[in-house]
Length: 117
Image (cartoon, rainbow, N blue to C red; front, side):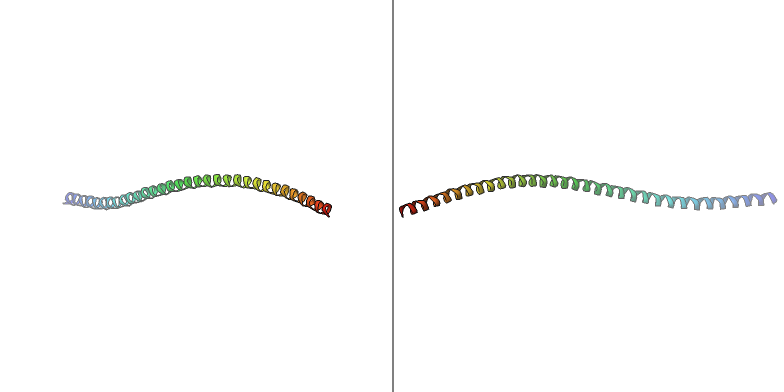
């Protein structure tokens, strides 16, 4: 009797412990699923970040190239402005010389008129 009851209690204790262990395993299993899902989320976010980073680097490269083109265009414009300024200066000089020549002719004509009386 006594021995049989002790065995029965042990079996009940073991069964209860098995239930607790089973419940703990279920909890651990659920936690593992959550962690796996989070890991997948993190991997997805990392991949998205990498894509965005790559896109930004590409955009940066294109912008740098555009900046280079714009700087080259500015250089060409400055060069043209320099040529134009030089031409304007030449034109002004030629006009001045022409004005001096015309003024000289006007004076000569006036002298001839006066001389002719």
